[in-house]
Length: 486
Figure: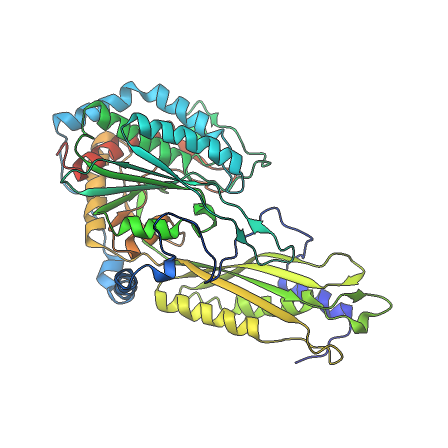
């Protein structure tokens, strides 16, 4: 414990950290604890899904940790040829190239930042109409808002999710998953799709994942044009909160995953490589309450929340260990209200990445200890500083899976024929809902969307060639899984 009575100490610590405490944040993270109730029909909260799902997660985590061959193996293209029906699917995509690109432009230019409820509602209606025309039964899944642990005491509101189902055929039960939200808020400068003369497409969410949704819908349209969706067993789930961790939709994904045979998620690829292994993701929030006081006339009667948070941030960042492949990032920090007032509140939003469930638990425990420890004190006011803490390991690590590897190899073989060949597989530090589905026991290929670069930035781009080639690939892959066209 240390008695700090000089404002200069605060400046020194924050300068060392290289952070700037600001008086607000345009986008706050979600706070959820074990007791929050999220309204979804017939869905249990994640921690109580079933012992079967929990056991499966543990099995997957163990496999990721010990199966070195599964982690390091190379995947090669499976030899394949296209049937006449599959050639017809590819031809349908070619014939509809311009409508597909027009649709992509329309969808990219509908802002669907996670906090833009109105924009997502508008987009969901469009997607619902598309799926209805393909013979799906659709359902809108409403979600209650959740309190956020921050100095403002705000709430996070969610747009509703979309569930669509078709058929009850005897074939494989296929789960198609994507998300409607993007990271771009309604007031972001990046709002339009730009089509360059060299075939490059630049726009918000063009990879993540408006492009993927265009691929999915038009693959289904191509199959429907051949009658290949008749007597099948298909579920489409499109959520509105993927970009903030799928905190409200995870229970639905887990329940749906448990009732299907194969999962396909339409996230994008980088360098034309499909992702087979992923790190797990966690998020946490800390809120420190101090005692406000005049910085000039009563500094000694204050307890700085900013100062306590500064010490905690230093310790949080020390949890990063590149040898163990674990990282902690204090990505957002807010605190204080005025220059001349000892800060009474500070909060931070924390990101965690880890390769196994065990290391995720290790990080979570480390954060808890830092939250519970006091680094500053003022003997006159022993009740301060006070720290509140919330954390969620919201996406499990995605382990290797034989069925997924076979599907990636098949995708490599097909893509070598239809264009924009998939070059192989990779490991990613980013998370998708495919990690949730696979941890619940569903073999899931989670990068069947377009290829590109610059996701989550104003440099986000793909190409016309990738949109068309990946639509062909998706149509053929879906057809083969459903037992059609191969």
